[in-house]
Image 1 (cartoon, rainbow over the protein chains, first blue to last red):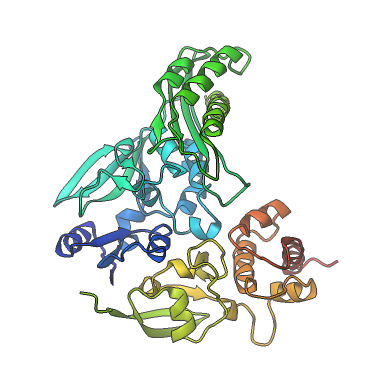
Image 2 (cartoon, rainbow over the protein chains, first blue to last red):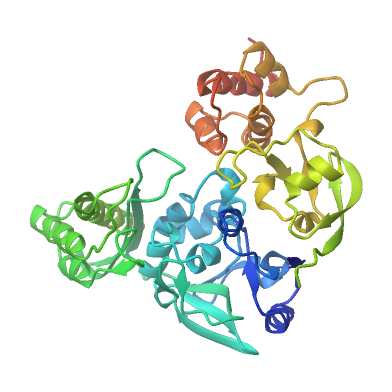
Amino acid sequence: MRYAAPATVDEAQTLLSDNPGSQVFAGATDLVPQIRAGRPSPSMVVDLKRIDRLTAVTHEGGQWTIGAATPTADLTRNAEFTAAFPGLSEAAGLIGSDQIQNRSSLGGNLANASPAADSVPALIANAGQAVIASGDGTRTVPASEIATGPGRTSLAEGEFIIEFTLDDPPAGTGDAYLRMIPRTEMDIAIVGAAVRLTIADNAVSEATVVLGAVAPTAVSVPDAAAALVGASLNGGGFDDATLAAVADAASAACNPIDDKRGTIAYRQRVAGVLAKRAAAVAAERAQNGA
Amino acid sequence: MSKRSRTHVTCTVNGDEVDFLASDDTSLLDALRDELGLTGAKEGCGTGDCGACSVLVDGRVNCSCLMFAPEAEGTDIVTVEGIAEGDQLHPLQQTFLEGAALQCGICTPGFLVSAKALLDENPDPTETEIRYALAGNLCRCTGYDKIVRSVQEAAVQLRGATR
């Protein structure tokens, strides 16, 4: 196996097309354990971290651009980013230990295509777009279209994610991500729930609900979002009927696995609980930020 | 095709510029141990879960088992061997000794490096902050309480406070 550290996106594209069986990586926090577990080694590993654009975080013209290989620690430590997307920042901050967060990235978390990836539901809930190096150029797709199943993506051979773009949230918007794990730190989600909503005139005008770890990929739950849209917030919180409708829709959207971390019934139940709690947190943030 | 490619790597380790040849599929941990003779960092799990291989890379704590050795090019690495000043132990090393915060010792280098990374950035951490900062380091014999107490004591000493 060879190692290469291109300095530009073009150079990386050339390396990938010249070396069949090569594999890009950012933190290798999934790649190395997979190789050690017996996955065949790539012919070449292409380190994306030496490409400036892949680790740049910028905010210009009403849009954030996050290099796909940026360590998640750089996002959680970025006060301006965290103020704009507190839920996404928190989700990024739940990936493994400090050691891992100095290596792990939004691009790797998404392209590794684990159903339980913590940053993915919040990235999708915030309508993140993935800019992909493709052929000699780029193409841009919603982040929700990258993962197609456990370990599988829509990225073609030789393609890789360069960066994500996120539009500034409208005034009165808040997001939140909550996850359930069997311990307090350093484990894989049983359920993750991201909610983003916008409040205007004391009522929800827009909402997105995305669940992780309860289906082969992260899943949007339009029925839960629909239950939130129009809900009023007189007195600060949602009424019980709204929250019950959110929880029911979230539970119904689950198609989970049964494993040592959680049974199907448990994951369904917890998905509902986390969705309504995340909605409450997002609403509080939307009101405080407005 | 399967020929092992070797890369010449130049970096700073514990303040000294070093260079070594490493196979591209070698981990930084193996390069530190086998090429540079720095056997402080340990391999526990080899998958980034246990933290026994923790080193500082450009001031930030990393699992050296997850890094390919050529990634070290141009970086500034600190291993547990580099945290004492000559014969003068780092306050963390001293408080770990005095607080009996180690038993078999395999995890200790990683804990010391992670704790140093924490205190370098946050000289006055709460107990909760210490526990989160050390969540990526596993100890299977001493238990965490003595480790946390020792980090707290070292933080006090490093702040120049007296007890």
